Picture 1 (cartoon, rainbow, N blue to C red):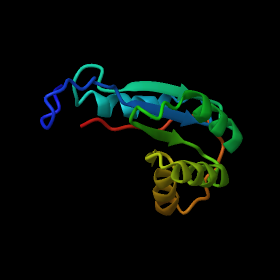
Picture 2: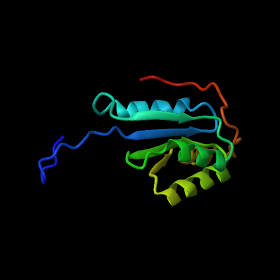
Picture 3: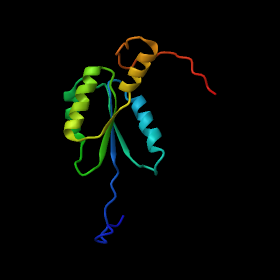
Picture 4: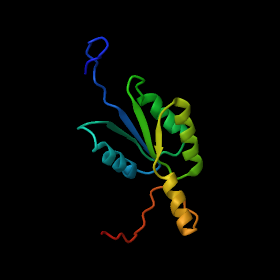
Length: 132
């Protein structure tokens, strides 16, 4: 890529997407991969941090893995409301864009069913899926 103002070559960088989960991170990784597939080959590098149980764990991971010269974002699936809120606050404080993939979904399904969520990471249930 060439800078149009100076004519100098600009090294291409590959953005990083961190996937943070309180389970394995399979759900968030699948969503990121689906979104990234809409762009060129190797549009982003995906790095996962699973089994998150504290904000300090996320802070340590980011401190060791964030390169300030690379664009990045965080996609997360954190079930615990308080942990999710605290992680969002930390990401906001660091100026890191993030997407909460699970929180809004839990809220909508809770509203539809009138039930309280279990708030247990990694739960699996069998539901009927109708394919049209």
